[in-house]
Amino acid sequence: MSTTENAIASAEAHSAHNYHPLPVVVASAEGAWMTDVEGRRYLDMLAGYSALNFGHGNRRLIDAAKAQLERVTLTSRAFYHDRFADFCTELAALCGMETVLPMNTGAEAVETAVKTARKWGYRVKRVPDGMAKIIVASDNFHGRTTTIVSFSTDPEARADFGPYTPGFEIVPYGDLTAMREAMTENTVAVLIEPIQGEAGVLVPPAGYLPGVRELTRERNVLFIADEIQSGLGRTGKTFALEHEGVVPDMYVLGKALGGGVVPVSAVVSSADVLGVFRPGEHGSTFGGNPLACAVALEVVAMLRTGEYQQRAAELGDHLHRELGLLTGGGAVEAVRGRGLWAGVDIAPALGTGREISEKLMEEGVLVKDTHGSTIRIAPPLVISKEDLDWGLDRLRTVLSAR
Image (cartoon, rainbow, N blue to C red; front, side, top):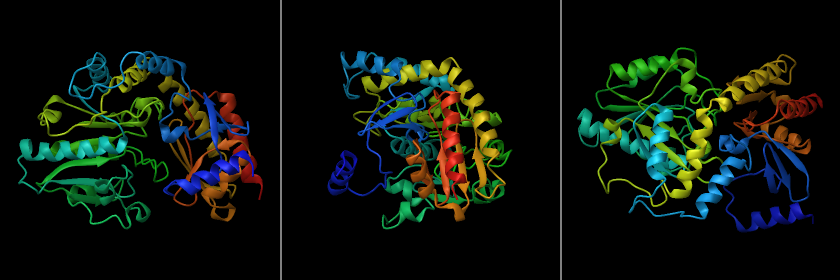
């Protein structure tokens, strides 16, 4: 057996099968490129589901982490540390908000947002105890905790994990009328992704997000934007909501906030909203730890310049122009997305999304499938135009090999 085969066999024998990875074993990575245990290089066109917006081994982020590793990595929230205030202050400023509640993973941040909305509903809106409702969209992906899968419409994510947590109303994504009809006096929040990543990079109809903002203001309901995948530069703006001039009541952030170095997530909102918490009501031992804050502070500093957003916008325009040329020839049925983020629907006759992903891997490009026939393209924002074009050439090669 090869080194790759041995590594995969060992992993399959000794780990739970909760993922179905492509058969590649990565040993090192830099920028937009990864190298496997056999020494073969691959162009990363997934970027850790947008966790690696700034590329693998980004020097600024690695240096920030190394410097902090020599000082202090964890205090728990039992004490203050000297990176915490700067992290909260700078991230709040980037978001145009006041207050930050740091956690570790995206799912933890979503859970935090749900708890915040409910507590706000009871303490501020005066919803009767136990009656708070949160509206979510069909085909959402907000994480995999038992509460979050309770409002998933994906059978694979939901099956056999009941009993499910009540308190959520599911409406069709992009349907403002359905959302309005679902709202009651007990509705405390709307939780949506400005672009649905796991669903295939679905962009809602123009006017939908401003409509949600207007409706939530009108009905005294919190607008919670899950920008874990779409935020922090991916779409050509700091936040995807900016494309339609919308500011929510709360951002839920993760993935790229940790720069692909450490898990960092956060809920960012006003002092009035996050001020509903009192000591002991919510927390995390590792949330807002010194190492996480040091890395995330560097991420915020990099985003403040606007260069990564501009790069995502310019290369994203190029990406979507080139992908658009693939439609109409029978191989690609549709292309969606914004910035350096695209969902490509492959014609079923050509193969499943998994099969196309495997063929691209053989050509030296790594992407991942979703929902059967769709592949997602989301390279690091640091990718060069030449490398992006090389990857697109490999896609054309795979699609033409019929």
